[in-house]
Length: 427
Image 1: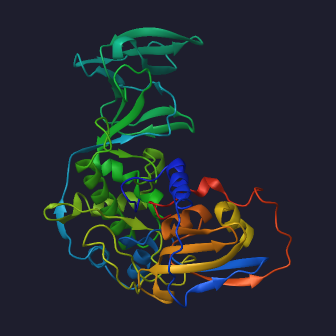
Image 2 (image 1 turned 120 degrees about the horizontal axis):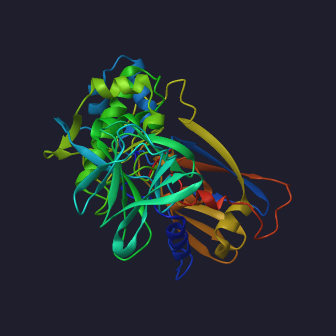
Image 3 (image 1 turned 180 degrees about the horizontal axis):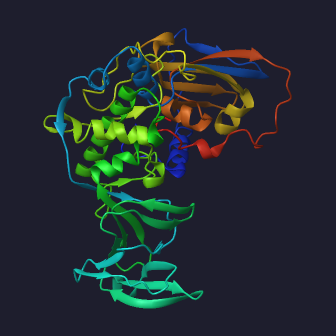
């Protein structure tokens, strides 16, 4: 999590990068924060933190717990101005791990299927089936079938969406990553009328959902109060998303674009205990669930988010000895930047034009300009971080002359899979 509400796709980031390379006029630069780049150079990027910096630092929560703060004090520090409340009910999660249009599950005692249009529930027989399946049917319906004797057989047809349930007991879903058990119900829904594509949606209680989130967002064996704070943040974030659903068919996703959810297999006794210890507790703002973003490490300062309770403040808890990303350093060839922004030609200067004003070097990068032999390209701090795969935007530069041979223009140098990674999640 830990997230802004939606993570940009790689294509969206590419468009954002491309937009900064056209229609440029010569800007006026702020004096003093310019880094000259010789013809052959290594750009050393020094930074603090990992992620966007909004809300709770997960390493900071552990540092605070090690200093004796309870989970309510930790939550109060990172989400100042929020109040305590409660939430109950269910949540619906899009399971991206199932890339098939069919929902295929293992048989188990009590497994039943429900036609959501006809409102009919049928307990599935013990007929020797090795798999049960919900697949796209005619006119938006769902074909219910089973596999036995090495072949698929028809069982029934639902008029619309259908779902599996087993009296709340885990159901094992066949996914692209193998067998995964999930609590609650597993539903097959059409994302658009008239399409044969289907989404797999897990509907379950909020508490069981949070148990499948917390150990994937924070080590379950960290200090109990840190893990309890994570449970509150994750539950609150899910409640916020439930009030602002992604689609008509589900409220939240199972990836870092929302917060990572892994079902029963992800659960751990220690994090389950943290969820139970904070049962139903959430943070509220104006009587509604708060937007409790969180990230791995603030680096020593949180950054201002989109709401008042995500303010920028100095974080004295993030820098404990077990945090490997409180401070970091990475070296890049100047050719890497030239390949990422080819409109500049040969890079000559990096000019930082604005920062957020908090901490070392004036804080996080908000905007900069790359100046080269062929042109000038303005870049936002978030785009610069995403394209180069940096841990955060809180960074500065040191340029070293090097005699290392430059790779040919257009050769590998940027891991483009990182273009959209962590813009939202802050991993």
